[in-house]
Amino acid sequence: MQLKRYLNPVEASEYIGVSSSWLAKLRLYGGGPRYSKIGRNIRYPTDELDAWLACNLQTSTSETCYSRSGSEHSE
Image (tube, rainbow, N blue to C red):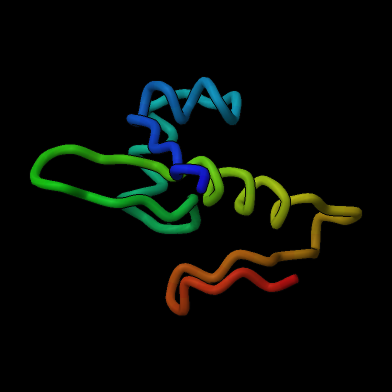
């Protein structure tokens, strides 16, 4: 059994190559990777970061994939 790995916002931003402030904006406005909040702590599962990155692969600027309202990934 492999345990899920959870990253804090700084680790998550390094993992996907963006700033931690950008991830904070995505948490506020939506559109970013799914995360867990435990007390004041934010944690991103690495499989959610990988899914969000994969979902955001595009071949044109008109494609969208990630839905915050339903929190499903279109594949």
